[in-house]
Image 1 (cartoon, rainbow, N blue to C red):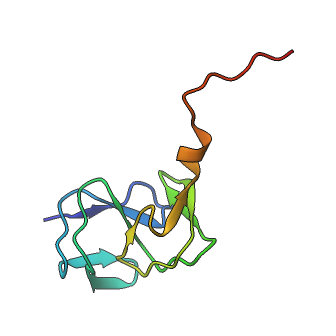
Image 2: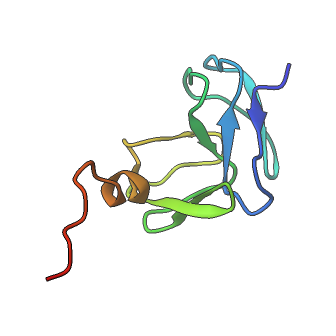
Length: 98
């Protein structure tokens, strides 16, 4: 069963498409590693080791940056990354120029 997919060849994260349980073997760049924890569908895992300051690339575009390290196969989420997408999108309409 496929648990992870690569959306774009430039991505450094993989997307979970089937539930991951702790210990499941995950195929990432460089081989297979056991999942450290359960990860639900739609979340991201590191395709390779990521360090603080590294850009998180998904869909071939940057979506955030790492604030804590993540090893290959580790969950990449708001506990170890900062989302540029969320910060850049607000409900308020832009103000009209004066």
